[in-house]
Image 1 (tube, helix red, strand yellow):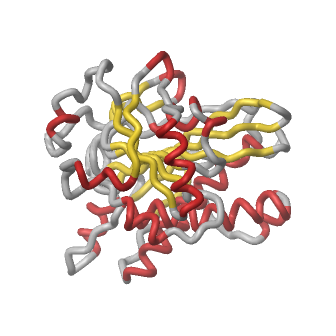
Image 2 (cartoon, helix red, strand yellow):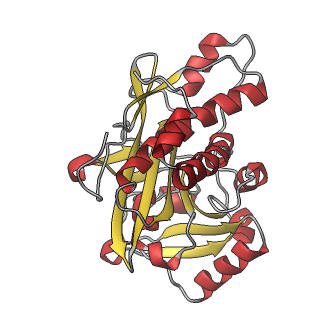
Image 3 (cartoon, rainbow, N blue to C red):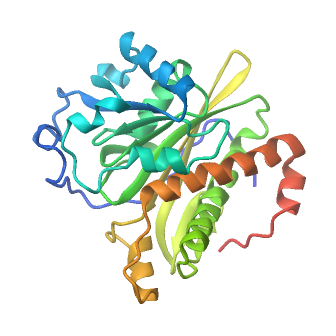
Length: 297
């Protein structure tokens, strides 16, 4: 079960190379222009996180690797731009979140090279538990430095956590994978959707009807006697290419026009992850697994 190194990488699912025109005109026209800054909207669940957002903006703290430019904006500035109806709904996500740590500080971008680069490169500047969500990314990170372009409709986010025991760091991917499947179950239950059987190919791939629909990417660095872990998730929610997606399967099973929303899944993920992670850290690996009976593939 153990991964050999405290620094590990896993594959996001390969996704079609298409940048849609439904982004705001200023973003779409420069989708692949590395000289154009990526827009980062800093958002918070409470006044505490909102103050952190203001400080990061004032000090112009965040940046991309290799000198990549970003334009930092606040949650209150989102409505000054024109984004498509399928843009990530920040308010919906934050209102559905019930965590004490994870996901409360949100960085949302309509177009970004990589969510993982944002949280890993700026790890020490961000509160632990920060999440970065992108509607589209064009340099998504994968195994062996592979890059995957990711379309709208795909749920793409990365978040941070900090760990002290190096032996448990490689195992956090298992907790992340399980939290994704538990989140989808929760959304189905709360909305009266048919059961969607997303299964884990341990440790880090997610399958639906025998097809890969998601993957987990984790990296860690060691600093000041702690492991700074960045964990990323890519999951096909509304993009049926190149394999299938949640909404395609839901449509086949439903008699009513229901759809999964990325915001609901992301909030449910953090609500589940925080609970599972606390069991894993505070009660140990053996207690964590004995309290669960989850079949893999």
